[in-house]
Length: 109
Image (cartoon, rainbow, N blue to C red; front, top):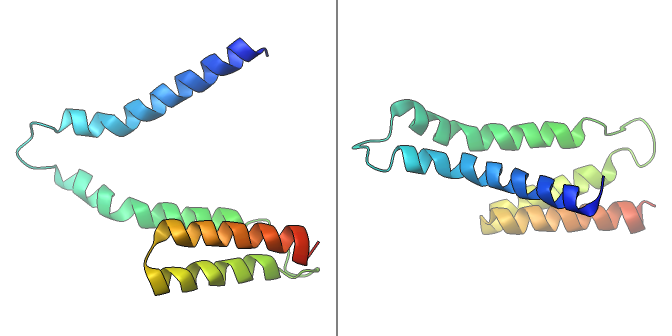
């Protein structure tokens, strides 16, 4: 795979991702009211996606061997604590990611 092929793949994936995200706004821009099914999905999906990401993050965690999932648990506690304190999702995710990387690269290396 050469550089041109890679750049084309990235461009196509970016365009498809943008189209998928903009499509509901284009389809329902003149609608009187948003369909109930779409409102329901908009209220349920963010929590479902976060739950899925948490399960994915913990799926390969080893709890029976050193470091006994301590980096994951400490980072998760930091994410939850900072979110409850500041109510800022981006800050919480950034803090948890940086803390986790420091823990696995330095503290528990």
